[in-house]
Image (cartoon, rainbow, N blue to C red; front, side, top):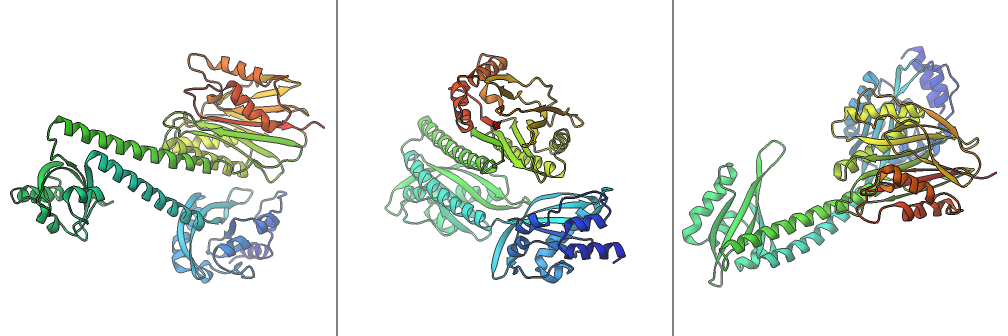
Amino acid sequence: MDGKDAELLEAAQAGSIQMARGIAGSGGSLLDITAVLERAPVGFAVVDAQMRFLYVNPAYLSVHGDPATSEHAGRMMNEVLPAAYTATVEPLIAEVLTSGAVHRDIEMSTEAGSATKQLLLNLFPLCDSEDDVIAAVIAVQDVTRSHEAAELEGLRLHAEWTDRLDRAHRAGGTGSWEIDLRNGRVEWSANLCRIAGVSQSPNSVDDVLALVHPEDVDVARATFTGLTAHTSTPEVEYRLCTPDGRVVVLSSIAEPVTDTTGTIVSLRGMCVDRTLRRSAEADKRAAVVRADRMTAELEDERQIVLQLQRALLPPSIPVVEGTDLAATYLPANISAGVGGDFFDAFPLPDGKLAIAVGDVIGHDVEAAVTMGRVRSAIRAYAMQNPLPDRVLRELNQLVCASGDMTMTTVFYGLYTPWDGSLCYANAGHPHPIVVRDGVAKAMPHRHGLLTGAVKHADYLPFETSLRPGDALVVYTDGLVEHRGEDIDTGTQALCAAVTAPHLPERLEDLVPAVIKAVAPEQGRDDICVLALRRRPG
């Protein structure tokens, strides 16, 4: 360890991030964030190239099951943390230190004391004033409870949809089955057991073949063999002999299931009772059952993604002195109902307030996932350098570089509460409204391309100032777009809705009043509205 590293370690052990970065050559006046990190609910640790802790906050110790009095600073990771944990994390740290890479949302489990915890890690570089990486920062959160809650919710949904599927099976005269080729175990649905006249599912393929009509055993056996070799037709008809002497005609639709290596690990299928109806009517009924099942599955997915989308939005609006804030998100009243509209407002270390409103193109799972990633990226970039043109430029490069992210419109602003100044940039988003002296007008600025359209797009920063009593209303296009009308007409209606005497005195009443007065009643898009007002006096 050279003299510079020794001084950096000594400063970090003293608990001063400011001192450590100063010794590393930052050459600037930095905010001392140690006190903030000491009280932060998220665990933070700083690690050097020798995998030695330079700084650890109490939350980091707590997450890993260590007492607050533990001394980690100056010690190697493998001295204080489990081997499995370090084996996963150290390669990521090495990549951060060598290339400046950022690793986001790494999920892993670890032993913490006598318990097993689920952790969410984010790793990023700590640089000096010359942008040289001098250490790696680990941010860690304990997400064990959320995993447990998700598992319980999954069990509840599984039980609910199993019951619904069984009722659908009864109504349509169908049943499902699955064969696990790894252990030979067979599982029939409750209604397939009813159709076959048995009280429980057969245990093996041989037990199933024992129920098959003797004349159809070869067909059933050949179907099973063909499915395991990808050569059998997906649909076959055969007869079952029930224990009470009846003969049931079944049409079975099956498919092989493969693992990540392409190996077939199981077979699954759906049976239709064609005993009484072997005609086109029976075929139509089976198609209806399959369609109902698919519709139910899509609705289940929509509800889950919608819950996820709401979870990704800010849980609360920050309280900022001298400033009123209000925001609302409303999903579309269409069957898809899952979109990418979002808002965010968060304070920065220097006391300024960052605000953002965006709209991811699309109304599906991909849009919801992109929304969460875009919102997280805006926060991360703002914490590094909150200037609006830089944040949007970095965000655009991220969206362009990510093949699984879709294009997004974003309005991002940096508000200074003590003097009302607002610096902002716009990536293809509708022009916000400013209300002054009871009159609302759209902000007359240019906006750049939406993020993800062009890799090297630039975004112009603009500046304005809110006077005491002025209000800023930022929204997504779902608020002002009406079928058969252009967006300018909707914008004019919005200005009229927030112009005196229609303007409510309380800001939290403004947002729902605007949505009620302006938003389309039917066929509308998702709507996000964020309002900010500088308090009089």
